[in-house]
Length: 386
Image (cartoon, rainbow, N blue to C red; front, side, top):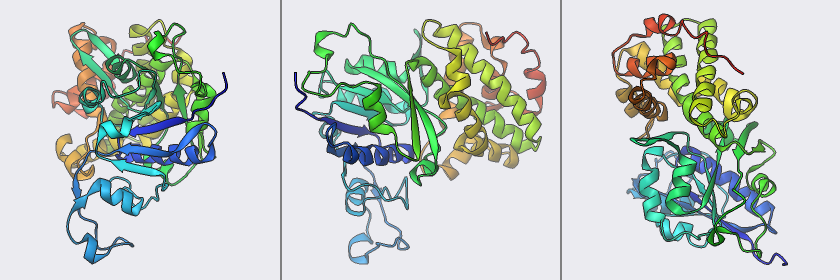
């Protein structure tokens, strides 16, 4: 059958990273008019924001009072709260109505704080196309009494669609300023999808080539693989290691110590994946892809988890106080991931199998001190890499 329809793309989320990804996607929907509809709707969690008088487009007649963030984004083509100073393509349409955002979208890109994923999916459920495909850019895992789930699986299960994952060494401010970086997309729908989830043949196929067209830019290189579990876990677990690296830098122990933390952390990430997602998780995803070792290196040197953990040690304050001061209302993903992973491991009597994951959580809780880290991770010889 001849392809007669184009994909409509929706972005679910508009924070720092969500806006950076929306910029990339909107640039590419313009660049590939045979594949995509030009307009990209971006769902915004509505809040009031007062534009600073220092903003170059400040108009006292319009901006002296708080305005809806979605209104400001559409007027100024800039997320003035979460990605200030970065021009967004004019084909991005911000909306606070999540049902409107996903209406008729054949590709959904999720980029929201991971603690809100389930609630947001509940709002979307029944309003998304049954044959839509999704990509999760969310770095985290969901823990329940039944086990641990990837957010790509949570989204897919709740919405009745297939969801892949995107993750890599991607600090949002650098990506949005078009500084060169790369990422990893994992996308491999099962061959036996229910008939209702089969994409109508009027649309171009949603495959690795289409995903690369949607996300690849001259400044943002994409590699497509099939290991959704590995990509998702790399993006989640590296945040725990970034906290540990921040602790070490806060103590001023130097590069040798941080390198040791990163080595042990990479082994624990790989071990976790192989232990709990053995059927699909590949060692090479952690050691060869941007979502693995590259993201770990970046996060342990320049990410927000590292920054806040370092400040916590230097100032002696609680991590929650640092979050409030530094993150403009957002939350660290590393702290919640550390807590959830620890709950999962403790329930199964496996804390001792992952000494660095365990140490990070207990330092955050005040049960251990940073000075104990070398002793706590000393016995890691059993973490073989084959």
